[in-house]
Image (cartoon, rainbow, N blue to C red; front, side, top):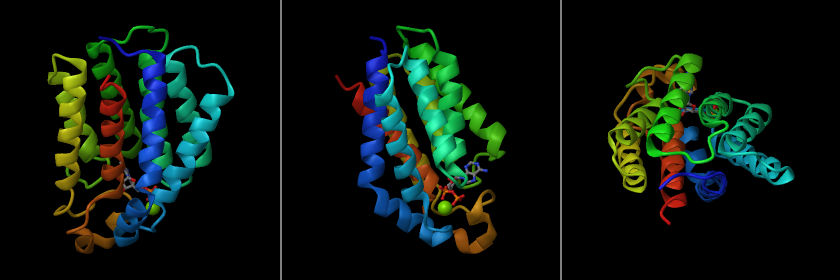
Length: 206
Ligand code: ADP
Ligand code: MG
C-alpha cells in the first residue's frame, strides 16, 4: 500500500472538515488559555487551502502539501498558521516528486515536518503545544509496519499526547503568559494536531 496524490487531497479535505466541525471547541480551548482564535484561524486557513488546491492541478502529493502550506502561511495570523505551514512545507519537500509514497517515506516526511515545527517554534516536549501531540504521533508511525494500522496507532498516540497536555503548565506561545493558570486546560494546538492525524488515518482507511 502506498499514498497517492489523491489520498493527500482527501486527507486535506477531511482535515478541513474536522476543523470546521470542531471550530467552536477549538475556540473554547483557546479562549481558556489564549485569545480564542485557534478555531477561526485554522478554519479560515484550511478553507483557503482547499480553494487553492482546487484552483490548479497539483503535480503530486508533495506539491499539494506545499500549496496547503503557502495558503496557511499567507492567510493565518497567529502562531499556529505559520507552524502548520512549516509542517506541511517540510512534509511537501520530503515527498516532492514521489508518486508512490511508502510507509517509510511518509514517516520520514512527518519527522521532517516535526523538526520544522520545532526549529521554528522552539517548543520542547512538555511545553504544552502542538508538539506534544505531534511527537507521539510521529513516533508511532516510525514504529509501524503497516501504513493504515500505523496511522491508526499514530492517531491514538496523538490523542493520548493531546490529553496529556491538560495538567501541563505552558512554556511556549500565548498560554505561557498565564503561567500556573494555564494548568488543567487542554492545549488547542495539540487538539487540532490530533484531528490532523485522525484525518490522515481516515483518508487511508480504504
Ligand atoms: P495564537 O497563539 O497566536 O493566537 P493560535 O491560537 O492559532 O495562535 O494557536 C495556538 C496554538 O499554537 C497553541 O495551542 C500551541 O499548540 C501552538 N503554539 C503556540 N506557540 C507555539 C510554539 N512556539 N511551538 C509550537 N506550538 C506553538
Ligand atoms: Mg490564539
